[in-house]
Image (tube, rainbow, N blue to C red; front, side, top):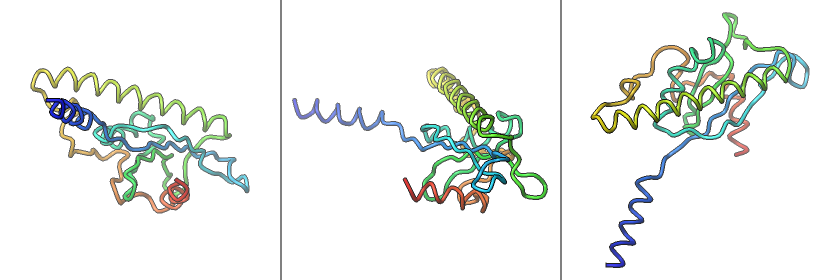
Length: 166
């Protein structure tokens, strides 16, 4: 009987474990970098449950007011939120480290609020036989999402440096 209780407890612990990936938010600082010609100000923004990656990938463009896009690292599965690029392929950003840091923190707060709201809706719908509160998990809208293994080459090079140090 003791072994059964121990086994049941272990199964409960394993089944309640939430898989999560790292979230990094980067805003282009037009005056940053070693040469003062621009650089990404990065924020390690914690983790998000894997089942909500799609929300960030699908909605970050709208949540950021069009200033950021999201990509998912092919090797790591981490989610990277990065400033958008203009028609010439240059990053669009803000002037100064302080503004870029504030932008990163505001996006982190917005993402966390949206995930908490999705968790509430899922808990509500779960008891009523509803599905995902945001439609199919396989659907990834067109705004702000490049998808796994399709991370912008410039962004990938910048992010590779970070992943190599993890």
